[in-house]
Length: 290
Ligand SMILES: Nc1ncnc2c1ncn2[C@@H]1O[C@H](COP(=O)(O)OP(=O)(O)OP(=O)(O)O)[C@@H](O)[C@H]1O
Image (cartoon, rainbow, N blue to C red):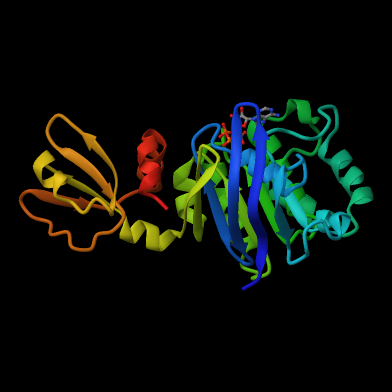
């Protein structure tokens, strides 16, 4: 499988933050969910991939093209949705269509209006009269209407109600049905990522701590509830983090292997949120999750 995004040793330094040797590969035809706490470096990584900020080091190749090659042509093939409206507020969806028809060679007017109808984006209103959900849906409709092969979405579902989010997730699933289409998608709504991502990429304080196939991750990781004494006997190599409660101790482990559920030990399924919480909460966990 080709890499739709290949990032090697990406470094970006800000006065109070460093994106440190970030490397990963987003396979063509997949959905990769990008998670991490506020300020972990998700937007910085995405902006560096899109060339919106200057990187200090590292290589990035997109859609199989070498670093820096065919930048203009590549832009046609990448749909981008950021957390904010990027269109002038005083225009309508008709104006957006006219504007983008002139910009994108492969602009698909019919598809754009079909998506607008499907999303309930009003015909007459100006963007300033749109709700936040409408603005996000407009950005997504645009990203999907110029025959992009890669969608990069930064917090595209934040602030949207569950019905709209479900619609957007369905559209992303449909988009990757064509195996040459790829989605790289960040969100704090880990349940959305859990629903659609094939792979999970987790960043913490500018470093990638985990990159794993979703099913393997959710099947192998487990939450163990036991006493402090039993917790102390768990294999430290598999322990990601420990929380001491009033009545029992909760341990996130990377592998269920060798665990014997019984009277003194319960083994539960994990959610992506558990994994993120244990990782973001405890800096010492950096040793454990690789
Ligand atoms: N232009 C900038 N100048 C200085 N520091 C910056 C700049 N842009 C981002 N940062 C810093 O880089 C760090 C990472 O920010 P980034 O926006 O990538 O995080 P994030 O994971 O996307 O967070 P969130 O989930 O809150 O959007 C933060 O500490 C932020 O303050």
